[in-house]
Image 1 (cartoon, rainbow, N blue to C red):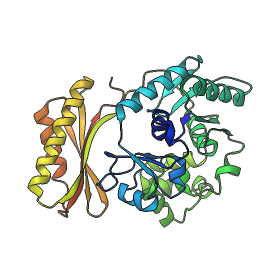
Image 2: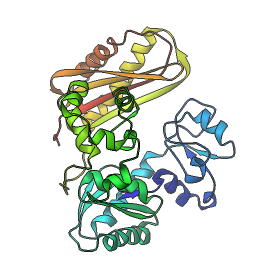
Image 3: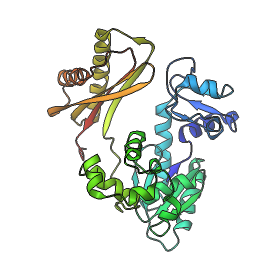
Length: 336
């Protein structure tokens, strides 16, 4: 179950006069400032506006758009209402984040179950959803891309290659631009070609875990497990975009420490110690890279997290002007 244009939908429910208009949410809502788009309504997407796009670029592509600031508290509250409504249906439900969840349903008519989900969420919360049906998580998640907006789509082992075979490898869940580029270098362009790739060659290029996993995913194979355990974030992060590039590295270090302190407070609030600290740096104009430092032992200690953040920062050898910094504390897998 995937909520359609969720953040934009929250804003339209709060401001009904915006319905049908191009809406862009991000930063403090000022497109003249440095920030990125958190989400865009379908009307704005028609102009090439999408998540992660610089707000200034969004304003150039869609000058008539309504720009709004992000309001995470409102989105989390709306998400809670949706997930509560979803659980009311009695299915095993695994929440993945604010706007999506897996649902396990044993039924002879999955389309009817999907329609029931859509109708109940719409009636209870006014949000539109798209539901993907599959025999496993990969198939169901991929199917939601074809269900949007506000629809239902089934993707199974029998139909996988007729639907996905000719798609670019980048259409697969978990295959980003960098991985797609590496696949292209190997002469692999489509899902079908990746599905037929030699496992040993893939393991050599991507590692013994990722390589075979890519081939498995391209074949539409994956886990069928859905857990009703409460969703727990794997990390906590803070980042900031600077209106003027930072050129002095001493200032960069100061900002990283400031973000590390904020993340430490988040870690303390979670009552779950961090095991790794990652620093993200976006250089001007728009090149982003990350480095991480694994902690000697799990901790919520501010001094240790600070030192780890600086250690990660020291891994960056490029000293070009910086436009964005981020610090992320990762928790141990399965820690609650």
